[in-house]
Length: 218
Image (cartoon, rainbow, N blue to C red):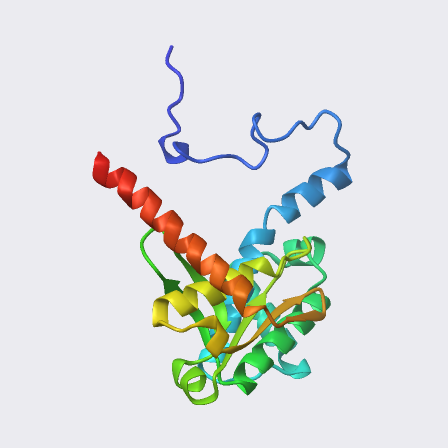
């Protein structure tokens, strides 16, 4: 006798794989919650993509477009309604999304912009001021959409500010900076100290040089 090969499953992982979950102590409610919450990263990616499209095309969200976003999650991103109802508070997530999108449009920002120092040091800002706007006003805005429940840290946005300055040869002291995190129905504001941003820039340059020197030795 030979084992079944299941070639279509090679390299894949089951939701209830032996290495990921123990079902022996789980109630039916626990199992359903575990199944639904596995979709949370996928829902977050979809909401970011919807936000990007709206900001890019300057199409604001309103309380009347909530059903359109829900339908998009179901029809375009193939996330079952049963999952959405069990994994997230959709009304709260939509309100957060609407505020984030409309603020990005209000300030004529650029969505999903890569900020680059090297192949070792780069990242994608959710939304950021256009270069023309920064040049004209001296104001750098960076907004971050958080779709999860884990409290976000502002240092991530300070890192983006540092990468922006490295990428486009700005000195932090020459800029007014406003960083925002949109999460759980709240907007957190932060005006970073230019000296802190400069320290992050120096660390990025040091890390980049350090690794490249090691690679050159080999």
